[in-house]
Image (cartoon, rainbow, N blue to C red; front, side, top):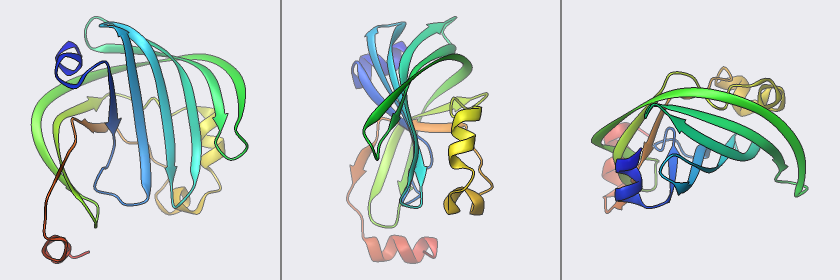
Length: 166
């Protein structure tokens, strides 16, 4: 994680499936030092945000992160609910460039982060996602691969769409 802080700065985003349009699984990590800080998780798809959570995190043994959930935010009513639980996730970071095209823009990510379990996989969020059409059609799954260090790349949108049969 230290290499990401050095390269990307004290605040950066981890995005799952950046090639999907109208979809979000985003983890914002805001480091106060190289081993801890605050986080924000945002989950949604199909023009609906199903969850936004905030809290603190601590990195242990260079590849384990403990998410300490403290707050659930309702993005539609702008109300917060206090919560408290911890989720432990192991991660691996690979420095590799991957291209992503969402139908409108092309991005290149510098790093791939593979998780052993999803920080989004907990009962409160599963309950909120249960009745959204997007999650019903996509089996309500949670991503384990995230990307960061995204840079927009100029592209020929028509060519990219045809190339990917979009």
